[in-house]
Amino acid sequence: MKQQDIYDDISSIRTIMERSTRFISLSGLSGVMAGIYALIGAYAAYTMLYANGGEAYVARSGNADVLHNTNFKLFVLAAVILIVSVSTGILLTVRKARRKGSAVWSQSSKSLLLSGALPLLAGGCFIIILFMQGHYGIIAPGCLIFYGLALVAASQYTFGDVKWLGLMEIGLGILATALPGYGLLFWAIGFGVLHIIYGTVMHFKYDREGNVN
Image (cartoon, rainbow, N blue to C red; front, side, top):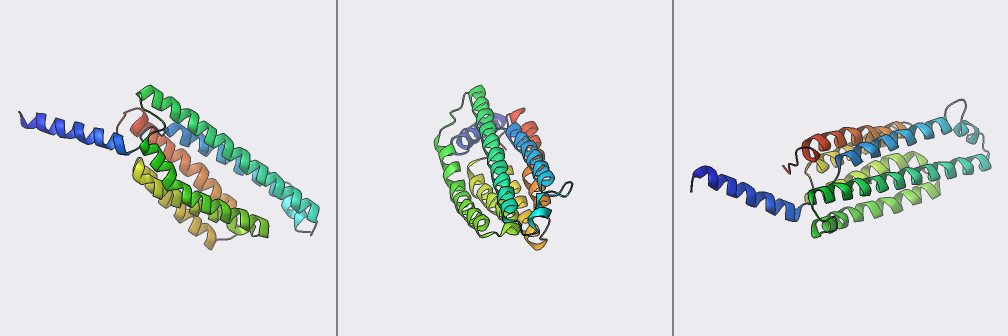
């Protein structure tokens, strides 16, 4: 056999092994859409809280009803953004998997979900407790940090780029903790801007080229 043929065989074996252990059907476009949804949600939250003497100013006067109403609206807004983002991600990922002839529910996808589930569940419980106790200033940093931890944990079963996104989310969360009062801005950067950049890179790097480097 020629030396080039040996290299080609090794490359093919490596690709097959990577496909069997890593979930490569994640859609870059789903990251872009999640980022757009997050920016829309951040703008809606900012308008609700601050624009034209928004409800945040009224709540500071001690009106418990206004404060409760504002918190409920923010909770509903966050839930809607989460549901729409997850639904879009699932839809685009399934479409990509079918186009490539890959199974969506495989051992690699199960491992990915299980690895990321613990930080997400722990973070979700932590955020709910903060919300119930009125520690609103730590909610945005907490979301970024726990989400970043989930991405880092799950990255070993998918594209390595996910790990770098997770590390940046963690860094933003720590910075947001050190700079109270800018939580919504850091939230918009982390879940909005970074997702759009990450999704764009993933789309052109993997979705179009089909690489798994």
